[in-house]
Image (cartoon, rainbow, N blue to C red):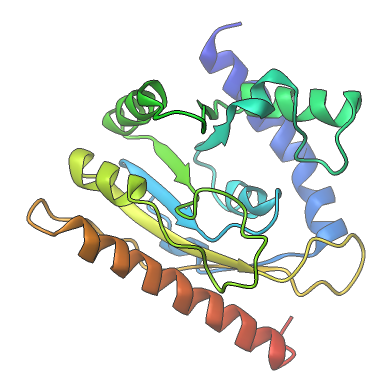
Amino acid sequence: MKKKQTFKTFRTVLCIVKPFYFLLLRPKVLNKHLIPKKGALIVCGNHEHAFDQFNVMLSTKRLIHFMAKKEYFTGEHSMFGKPNKVTNAMSKWMVTMSGQIKVDRSIKDDSAKNEAIELLKEGRVLGIFPEGTRNKTDAFLLPFKFGAVSLAQKTGAMIMPFATTGSFKILKKNHLNTRFGEPFLVPEDMPLEEANEKLYNIIADLKKQGLEDIKNGKY
């Protein structure tokens, strides 16, 4: 199956799944109008749950290619709860059909980086969790890796920050919300440390806003 046909099939599946997803999890999505409708874009946010990318993917008609660990592609791990043959197969299908980028986290994966660069040069959308892995600690955010700001600087892609707060409990008041911030560029003369700190602070602020809204009973 050709890539375009594969992605078209995945978009069709998303359209079918979307109403059920919103009915069961009741997520709130704020500021999705800020997502650019065209041009190279790197979507970046915090990462605490295996489903974090779904709120984002369902917020735009643009296909987002997230960086995903290779174990999803090999069927070794599951993003749909407890690993078993069914959930592992579902995860493998999803990352393959949606054009996610396979990353081997045990090495410096230059092939994944090159694929991401080519994708951005084509004016498409890349998704990165700058923390590098799910935050299962008590830390507000894990330290950010430099991949997102480095790619943005090299390719001229805009960075689209977001933060997700709440939980992914089905048919419960889970306060689930995703809030997007203003997209921004990383100029060639900006030190990557400064760019990374800027991204970290924006996502931290977005997360604080989400938590404050939950505290005030908005969701």
